[in-house]
Image: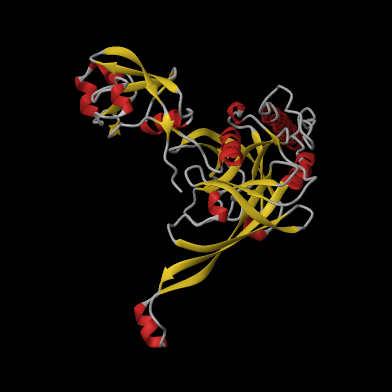
Length: 382
């Protein structure tokens, strides 16, 4: 009799476990892809994968096509460095600067059939401020061809670069709309980690809008390692939604926190590269020191309840001053978009085109005032 009771209890637990498994699987597939609207028509665009009820999405077809739009990039630059006087004395060398090679390996994303490849700036350039004597770029295409690459444009501020190879008939990625990404949405990271070509890792969007000065990063737990830089972050529709660029790690390797540049920003930067050879950013000329309100100021002033950026000082002979901005103004919006911090203000202004006028809302003496402020071109950082 005891054996029969134990069998009944065991069967009940097994039944509950199976039911729990079905419920869990149901939750996992409930995450919607990036956009329910049809993707932009482009050669090589992928179809939305079919997902069976109660199963995880099968992204194998997405991955197979995505690797056809991914490239491997290597760069060799010759950097001039100061020699070591003690070593010069020991080895009998003449003093002065020396030139030594520095190599970088990473990934790239094919964005046009005629050979444009998008990648990270740090993959093809040295951002340590060293003097570079020469630079050679090699791009390995999905079919194994290795070709010389030429730089179309670089932008350290967003860590993006565009390279051109002399090739036609390539399979480009279809662009996705990164503004419609959702947390917990499935994504694939495509790249060449540790020179393992065309590697694919699966994860989700962990967070959105992780802010930097000019970039609101996408955070993902898809495995990203050294060599993945410049590679594609792809949604379940096979669309390019980000450019993998960096990781947070205490070991130097994958720890589940990676970051990608949103595709919408990458596309705008690429358009500037092709048109101007650099990124054109807007600037409000004449603003001196900008800062957030201190805790004490938030207690003493009525404007403390309004987020924004405080103008601490500025130049009297500037276009910003002539437009009516004054020290002590709290900037709260640019063209109707709220300003919450200094980085957000920088991004909003940078997105405006030079030669235009922006409507800047400020709070002054507890009153909200709208001013028409000229936008000028930000000086190049190259």
